Image (cartoon, rainbow, N blue to C red):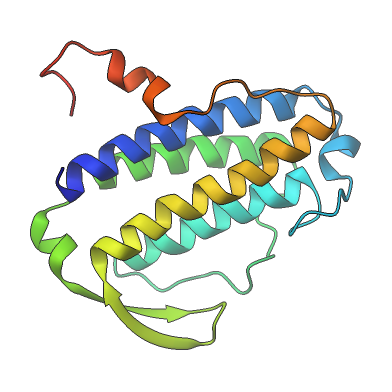
Length: 173
């Protein structure tokens, strides 16, 4: 599997899972979404905000743009509907970006100025792309646990169940 195929599949998985998480979160009151439940970012809302913030920062890096993130807990949107619309738009941007990746891009070293670690480092681009998608899965799992604590089930999360794979053989990607 090449980096483009990997990223396209993971972008589809990302959008699918975000849709499921946001649908479950929409069934809660604003107070429930924003209640501090003791997670890394406190609430479901803040966790979803962090996920969008992280995606925004990585997309800015991958596009050679300045990173606008001030801190990992920066709040982009206070209103859930705004956050959800921004999530949908980001997922579309990620899918479009993934479709453009080349093996040359994946093989090149990538310089990162990290807001979180307050330093610069160079890593293989393919590893950063993998981290980008892994970060999403990690924090969505936290959101899923918080939703479960409030009686909401996001359903199946297994990658092989991704509707993307239900296409006719040879038509994927």
